[in-house]
Image 1 (spheres, rainbow, N blue to C red):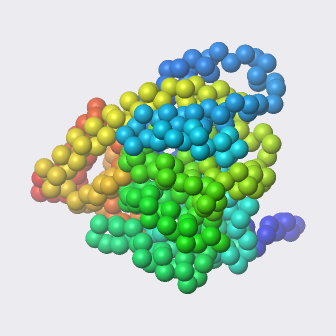
Image 2 (image 1 turned 45 degrees about the horizontal axis):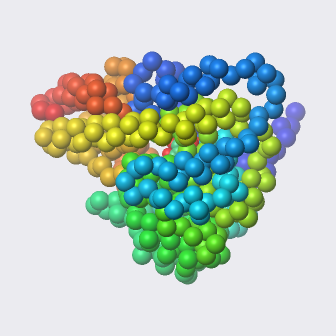
Length: 377
Ligand SMILES: Cc1ncc(COP(=O)(O)O)c(C=O)c1O
């Protein structure tokens, strides 16, 4: 019997490695999720869902407006007060997580033979999306020793070999590399034929968003991605946003199904967006926990790298996979960066609350002290 063949691009595609199963009940520091869960108001709203909502197709009325209002009033330092005037509901695309937005972006804009320009190492879902479209990939490495953004190289590539898509993860997952909004806007203005996508999933931890300065009329080739997974704690329900010029959001939305976001996610998103102070409180606690853990790492002389985002990189004295396995045995999940260029041998550790990082740190010290005879960490 012959198995039906998929498109050649799909036959040669390696599936993106999704989180392992069986993660519940563990301290999950492996996928940068919110580690304490969403606002109690989200849980309340979900509990109050009427039975009818299960039987009826989801309705999205008011959600784009709620996103606009949330982006306009966010009380974070540097948060834009003028966005209410600038952003319109038709500039907000709703997706089943930012993963689905990324997939749709490639589906709508990436044609066979086109190029994706991005950085390396970065979030692992960009390249499979490019490959499934038959696109070529140019991935420019971050600059050692501190993983600085390769701005000059990206500028040159944009000018000399204009790609179809430029994907910038800011701050970058996993190196945490931060890029100020101004150079990103300059890149977009200089390359009108390139769709410049800024993945701002972890922006809340740095405040470096391009949104306060973005002019989607002058630079309609700019798209910004945001999610409720990592800060608001809705990773399991899936809710992501693409923000850009109405015409671009329209094209991206054309390649998604009419009901791809389910109505539980819609209810949760309304409640989460209305309770921004809960999310801000969580972000503030993560930043406190980050400061605490950095002090411990510095005092213990453990090689590490921390920049933006709710995660940092640690190079244990013993093999990273071994430390990852022993931490898992102790109920703590972290992620080995084996196979990732420039950061081979490191562990990416997501940041949660101070109490969670204290728990991680005592397990890490115990494991690395016994794993490496004589080690003092
Ligand atoms: C940089 C980046 N973009 C997008 C995603 C996916 O986000 P979502 O959960 O909204 O699909 C992740 C998740 O790890 C990520 O790290």
